[in-house]
Amino acid sequence: MRPVASLVVKSLVVKRLAALLSALVLALCLATAAQAHAVLIGAEPADGSVVAEAPKMVVLRFNEAVAPTAVSLLDAAGKPRDVAIRAVDQSLMVMLPAGLPQGTQVVSYRVVSQDGHPVAGSLLFSIGVVTGSAAPSGDGVLHALIWLARLGLYLGLFAGVGGVFFAAWIGQGPAGERLIIWSLKIGLVGAIASLGLQGVDLLNLPLAGLLTWAAWASAAGTSLFPALLLAIAAMLIAAFAWRSPSFGAAFTRTAIAMICVGLSFAVSGHAATASPQWLTRTALFIHGVGLAFWMGALAPLAVLAWQRKEPLLRVLRRFSMIAVPVVGLIALSGLALAVVQLESFGALIDTEYGNILVAKLVLVALLLGFAALNRWVFTPAIAREFHRTRPLQRSIALEFVLMIAILGLVALWRFTPPPRVLAMSEDVPLAVHIHTDAAMFQVLIAPGKVGQNDFVLQLMNGDASPFAAKEATLTLSLPERGVEPMERAAALGPDGYWHVRKVPLTVPGRWHMQIDALVTDFKKVTLEDDFEVR
Image (cartoon, rainbow, N blue to C red):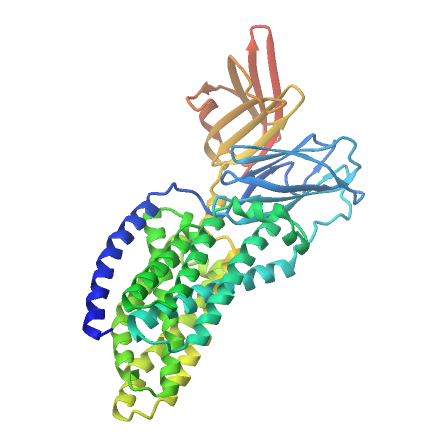
């Protein structure tokens, strides 16, 4: 195909895909908002507490609604015990068996947060005395495999799909074919492995769980599943595009593949579920497509420099002209995502997520340095003396190594909640759960500190069904500081909960709380408990 004809075809393809892309991004930005990466913000009994008698239930409260996948109990004698679980709003209720021995009990949980990531942890409480039980340790081998699969997936999307796109739109030739095709193969294996390992992680299975249907079915129910489907589609389309019969077909297929790359990042993960989603999802799309364009160019450019083919200088200039605005978009989108996820400069030092970001920024700075050398030093040198391609080859090789290292760091974010989620957990209300055979009351105290506090009372029967009450009264006291009981009437709100607003908790300490729920004129249910005011 003649160059002029290919440019005409390319122009038509760009116009049609621009309209399609605008519609897809708009639909993506209108997706339902959700908080990312669930965090345990409270428990009853509290973690590390010692209770006189065995509780009938353990309540785990998260900062968002979660879906339980595995909950287990290891009693003080080291014996696994069966438990029943029930999710109510943002709480997970674990019904404990009778006859627990004295000592330290370990409740291990694994839930799915709304960003599709599994969240695991353990809660320890003791009956009577503290003994030497310990929480089961995490599976480092599983996490290493998850990281490796994620790195392979990134290689397929960026070096593979990006390389095919570069060959069609910039290089218009098969340079770097071997590395590009191998990247696509590795990426496909990584995508499939990521799905299976997600299921194993969700259900807390051994690695042999990869051979079970339950692991794959469980992973398919998370938001990671559509993201991986888009990634697999991108790599398969790119593989077909490599054998396209014409430039027009290659333009269309590679453009669709790149759109799938951007969408795969925009539908799942920490940042994709952050607010405002019109910003985070758009930024993720731009960031993913921009990185694929940049990394995809490295292998073809290195091969052209090695072979010293005549089109090298023309391809270098064309790529450099487009790369400058693309790098600018990558930087702007990355900055927007960092601002949303970090929320403060201190998080760069105080959190593991921030530490990874700092390391990534250092490598990105080095990467930009090599890119600048390529554009302003090595390319002009080749223009003067065409045979001087060795410095450019080395620089591109170092760029590729730095890209792999950056992707390895990014893959670590799979295991690290962003600082904005950790900050949310610090501002959540204090939660108190009171449970007897007659009733079960869930109390939220906001902010749970000295000063004015709002109380929300969720009244339930012992089986967690709604509790019908005519009136509810809250009585608070702090005997150790001489604060006598103060009584406040609760008002039933449109949300079905009882509210007591602006209650002054003037001093810190362990306050006593009594809730009286009037069922009839002759029947009243009273529950009591203590809570700590910070």
